[in-house]
Length: 472
Image (cartoon, rainbow, N blue to C red; front, side, top):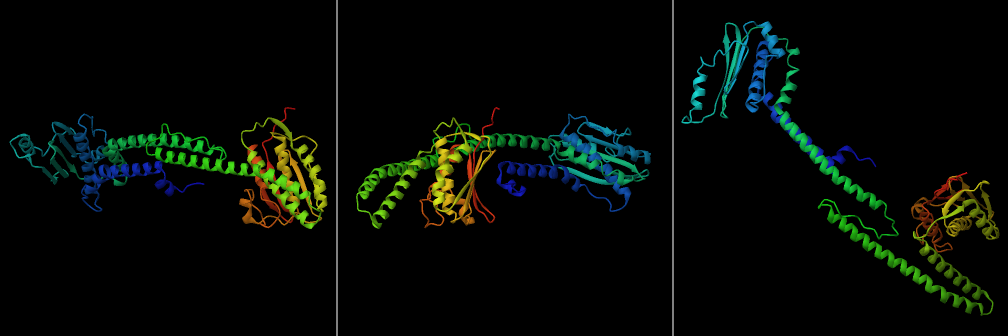
């Protein structure tokens, strides 16, 4: 069944790691990428000149920020297309930036760093006897050449300063705003984003390895034979958090195995011990004078004997048998029909075989397969009315099907039809073991048995087995 994405997110370990990683990376992008952009003062609503100045402020502050946090990086704005466009439209445009002792400019040097005495303030900050107070200021400046701005920041022991002047002609902002902001976000937060991505990859690898280990346990669990629970789930190499669960499952498997063995021992022992007293009882009953009471008692003993034999047959079917004989399903069906025809005719039921001339072979136990087919035929005959018909067929896919003309099977009974002691209706003859024996024989041969209702034709049982491909 396919899990919904949201359900997968909170129920899967991989989904939880993915969700946490996305939240972490989103927080990094906001804190180191979007937040600085949001904190840049907006200098005008619709006037393109202040917005052009804001574009310059954004680039220069970005230059200063990158240089302060990565002093070894070679940062330059000489190839910046927006600044080049501003310079082309404003011949008097100039800019200057300073981070510690590193200087950047448009080729015209500084304009206000010394005249506004920021050099003296920086010298005082360098004096260890001077109180280490955070200094920060921003100021809009105007010159005859046009609009300007300066920014001074010294709160982390490194002087950061930038200025620009001479903006009189604005830019076409629709073409200048878009390309820079993604680069700002990436340059401002790429270090932590790459770190977060690396951590996410490590988390995925760790969880993936554990999921593979758990997947191996799942594969082993699915390969278990419910009738042979001597295997245990492996505990080696598992995460310590999963080991207690595996140990608990192994304990449960051991308890189920012990209970199943006790049940099988009881049934087989009880059935075996019943046969001798029943044989003695039948012998003594045969010595009584003939009469209705004798016939009834002999019939009861016969049914008990049949129950004991069926229990022994059910207990004897196990996976320890070697299935090396080639069995022709068509021949098996012919034998069964030949044996069952007198009993069916006595009930007024006609048996018909629909089988091709060629053999349909499977690997198996011929005696057990005859028992399975016979049980299906007996079941169909018992449900068919007088004058009814039971069809038995064999397909080339190694499928034996038996179809009757009875009342069919109630839908609520189909899931439990092949369970031991299942009788529908409960008061009918038999002990409810015939179909359980068919299921056990089918599973022993690696096959399956199913039942379904056929429109206006009763029920159809299908025994499907793995075919043997002929070498002819």
